[in-house]
Image 1 (spheres, rainbow, N blue to C red):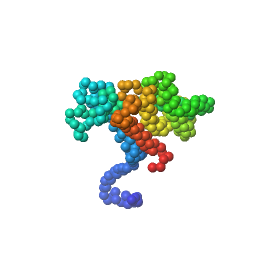
Image 2 (cartoon, rainbow, N blue to C red):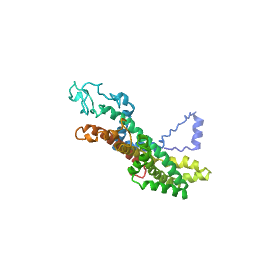
Image 3 (tube, rainbow, N blue to C red):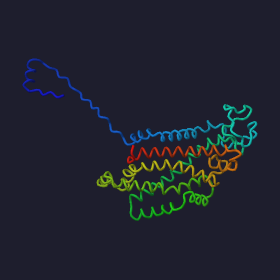
Image 4 (cartoon, helix red, strand yellow):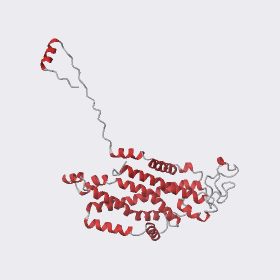
Length: 327
């Protein structure tokens, strides 16, 4: 409410009495603007499937970090002669669930080499996370460089880079990875490198599309007007604003890399025995699917849950980071 006071009234009041006027403090209650990453996080936590994926990945990371404390044995320990009463390919035995106390306890049973399957699956989480992150990191780094240069420079540079990547995309994904590993030789590192190479075009195309869209924005034109160089515009303005789709693609790619390396290990081209890799565990006991199904079930379940977790997490990030999707 605003009061209008005439000057004559003020003079009359001041002549009759002395008035002390206390200053009035105005408090602004304006709410600060919410940043894009905070807004994306709020959208992310509202999705039940994304939270489930985050929980699965968090449990997997916890298992991988504390594997030496969780696993009762080493991943390559042969227990024959060390544990009394152990049997080859023994079924799971849990004393809490009624397994006789005189039998050795093995939560997931014993494999064909008298090794504790639970310990090998736990240590396999370490290897699978390493496989996923290293493979995707190699693909993302090379793909971002190629896609950013192609999208920002354009012209014949863009045509050459994208045509080479189209040739790579023309081959079936797993078949090309098998060919690369066959040339390099069997082994986990070569399998990771093969999967990384065939994954580069996907990341390059994603970042190229984002760069093509972002380079026409007003802030890029303003940066060009003030004389900012090409590298400064690309790495200082365009890429930071074009990175959201890449985060989603990389998250989904981790699960894909894990299952593809497991497939190569299953074929004997990836991890070699006695490495505790889930795909090699399936390969070693694939003929026992009817006589000892637990030896195939638990490594397969571990692969399924890991890939499911990253897929749910990637879908949640996509919905949270893409402003064009309806909330």
